Length: 221
Length: 273
Ligand SMILES: Nc1ncnc2c1ncn2[C@@H]1O[C@H](COP(=O)(O)OP(=O)(O)OP(=O)(O)O)[C@@H](O)[C@H]1O
Ligand SMILES: [Mg+2]
Image 1 (cartoon, rainbow over the protein chains, first blue to last red):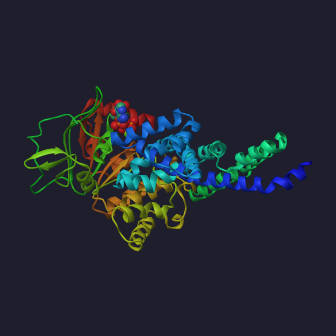
Image 2 (cartoon, protein in one colour; image 1 turned 180 degrees about the horizontal axis):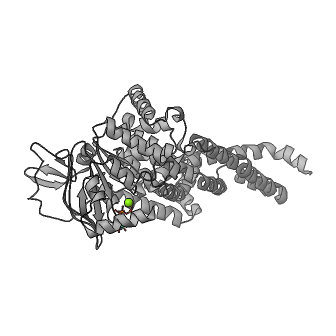
Image 3 (cartoon, rainbow over the protein chains, first blue to last red; image 1 turned 90 degrees about the vertical axis):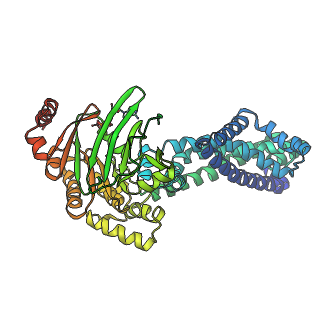
């Protein structure tokens, strides 16, 4: 079978797997960003309890394997009465894991906004919440964007693990195709290229574009 | 803040001539390093006081304590008759909570050596930020107020530029307009010309001259420009080692310094010029 014939026969399954992977990536990213923001801010809170919760969260999710976390969420949580559909379990696991990494990115970026900015905001008598929202975060976002570019590519790669709980993503589809055709080079080669194309020609340019847009807002472009 | 006996300090200052700012036995230390030692300093309403002195003598610290950027270790600071660092509870003074600090802090504005404009906002937006989001003014009112102040500092044409497109002198003038937009009673200037190229220092000092002439502001200004301090101050304080070594009218302090350390400092400064 030529590669074109291979694509003709299995193209639609590969395409549907790709769409699932993209959807998983988008949903996990949104979740990861939300978690990172909340946890990163909690890490900086004057309240020791909030700080403690955030630290424990980050330690657990960064210190253990994503695959084990995925299995926990899919197989163990039901024992405690929380049952998630496999697609949901998949993107929640990936989002929660990468969110823990993102939290440190958020925290670091906030701390690297120059001291003078905090002080100027205080001199204008802003409340801590206003200061964060109006002055610090907008500047922190620009600082953390390059880090997020890398993290979202990690996240995309991480989504391949959800094939192991039978979510029909790209990895799952090519494994199935390989199982019946044994065309390993074609199947996994195609997957390799698709993951690379999503990372290199979708995520990276999007992050670059965001960065430029933010820089324009700062009058720097 | 260390526990201390505050019974000697009044709950508020009353009488005919209540100073706008009053430091009473204020002490500040970092660990074992005592930066300010039982400082007493009153600034009358509308008075312009310049603070000079060698590096590390505690000049910046005085302003930062007043702006509540630093806590104090002893004594009480009063603003407009009310305690700033403390608040009355019953017949005693207790350390101020954040609400009290916010209420009194509203009377104070500050300009920094490094300008500290918000880089993601234009000059106009920088000025409108406080009035809209802290004072709760409408956008229209805040814009009018800000445009007026930007005109006063000569920045009308650049009002839609971000700070990165402005020179140091221009940024500092916007920073002054931003602080003034909050209508403070007390303005603090910490070496606002030290980061500027010599040729643009004048544009900033001229704005400060204008403030002195046209507003009934109380001002505390740390500066290394002796000529400027001499020109516009009502009083000059010479700081040395965390204490006021000598203070007086500009003519007295610059013309006939009494203390040896003042004389040494002034002659060293003159030699440097
Ligand atoms: N956060 C800090 N931690 C420890 N020491 C500090 C801190 N801030 C200031 N100091 C010390 O306090 C002393 C007074 O500092 P301050 O900044 O008030 O001096 P200054 O008179 O403004 O000097 P300069 O003319 O150099 O600006 C210095 O010895 C300084 O090292
Ligand atoms: Mg200083």
